[in-house]
Image (tube, rainbow, N blue to C red; front, side, top):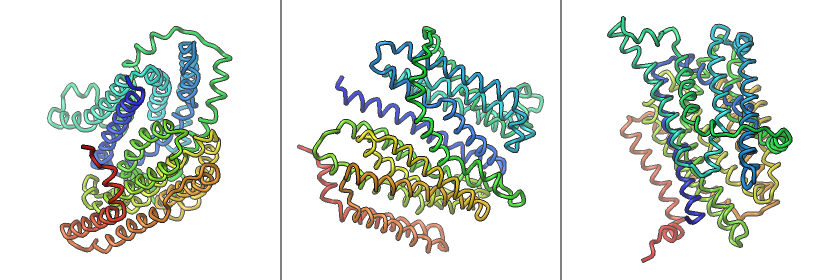
Length: 492
C-alpha cells in the first residue's frame, strides 16, 4: 500500500475515533445539566481536573518515549516490556498511597465525606495510565482499527453505564421499589455513579487489551528505562504546563471564591459552559491529525512557506466560521442545557476564541518542529502556565469564573503572539496578516452586531443572525473566490 495512503487512512481512523468519542461524551454534559444542580456538577468538573493532572504525571511522557525507542529498534519487545513494568510499578505505588491516605487527600481538597471518590478516581487513573503503552503498541504495529474499536467501546460503555445508573435504575425503582435493582443501586451514591461508570468502562478497556498485555515477554532493562525517562522528562513538563493552561482554573475556583458566593455552583456553571467549545476543539483536533503528517511530508519543498501561509489563512477562516456559527445560534444551542446553567453563556465567546488562538498557536508551531528547536515549545507552555496561574489567582476572587475565562483567553493569545514572533525570526512564513485581520474584524463586528438583536423575538433574531453569517461567507467569497474556484476545480 502507498505510504501516504496508509498514513491518510490511519489518520482518518484515529481522528474519527477521537472526534466521535469526544462528541458522544459531550452529550453527557447537557444530560448532567438536567440531572444535577450546578453545585453537584461542580464536583464532576473539579475532580476530573485533578484526574487530568495525575494522568500526565503517571504516564510521565512514557508513551512518546516508547515510540522513540521502539520504532526501528531491533528489540522493540524489550522496550515494550520495560515501559509496561515501569508504568505498572508507578501506578501500583500511587494506588497504594491513595488507599492509605485517601481520607487525608479527601479532606485536603474539600471532600472529607467522600473519600471513596478519591479511591475510584485513583483506580481510573492507574488503569488508564497503564493501558497507555498497550494502546501505543497497537499504533506502532499499525493496528488502527483495533485501537479505534477499543476506544469507542470504552466510550460506549461509559455513556451506557451513566444512563443505566442515573436514569434506568431510578426509573425501575420508582415503578418497582422491591426490584432486584436494589442490589446494585443506591440513590445515596448520586453523582458518584458518574465515577463508577468511568471506572467500569476503564476495567472493560483493560480486559479488551488483555491479549496485548499477556503476550508480553517479561523483561526489564534498567539502563534502557533511564534512557527513556531522560527522553520523556521534557514531555512531562510540557504536559503538566498544558494541564495548567486547561484545568488549573477548575481546581482553583473552589479555593479562591468565598463560600458565601457558592464556589461549587459557580464551578458547575463554568465547567458546563466551557464544554460548549467542543465544536471548536473537534475542528482543531481533526486539523492536527491532518496537518502534522502534511507538513512533515513536505519538508524541503521550495514553496513550503507560501503553502503554510495559505493553510493558516483557511484555518482561521474555518475557525471564525465556527465561532460565528455557535454565537449567532447560541439561543438554539442553549436549549440543550438546563436553564440554571445558562447564566454562564457569557464565557462562551471568550472560550471559543481562546481555543481558536490555541489552534493558531499549534499551526504556528511548525517552525520549532522543523528547526528541531522543540525546547521552545516547552518554554512557551511554561509561560502560558504562569500567565494562567497568576491571572486566575488575581481575577477569580474579584470576578468569579469570568476571571478564569479571561485568564485562558489571555494565556492562549499570548502563546500565539510569542510563537508568531519567534517563528518569523527562525522560520519566516509570509502569513497574510492584513487579510486575516480583515476577516477577524468582520467576524467581530458581526458578532457584536448580533448582540443588538437580543431583545427581538427568537424567529426575528435567528433571521438577522443568519443574515450576519451569510455576510461573513459573502466577504470570504468576494476576496477568495479565485483561489476557492481553483481549489475545488474538477479536472475533466
